[in-house]
Length: 83
Image 1 (cartoon, one colour):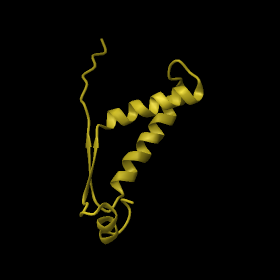
Image 2 (cartoon, rainbow, N blue to C red; image 1 turned 90 degrees about the horizontal axis):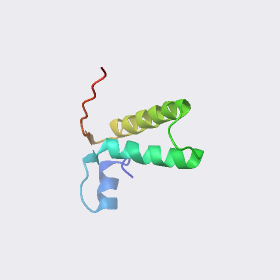
Image 3 (cartoon, rainbow, N blue to C red; image 1 turned 60 degrees about the vertical axis):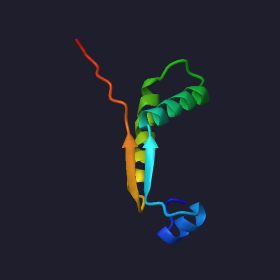
């Protein structure tokens, strides 16, 4: 629906939509991980799962970026120390 022309989006949503906000992208990632572990019947992410996750995240970000409207991603920063 978000890929539609501005006029079509307005008729679908009953108001103009010019921005989509993903809050938060890390929650989207957690959902993907949870679903991947369930579908693969794994207790923890395996090497191939991380590759799959990277592809999924790239597709989501690219998909929002390519929409004919503004895209905003909120992310929770996390500091990691590797001693």
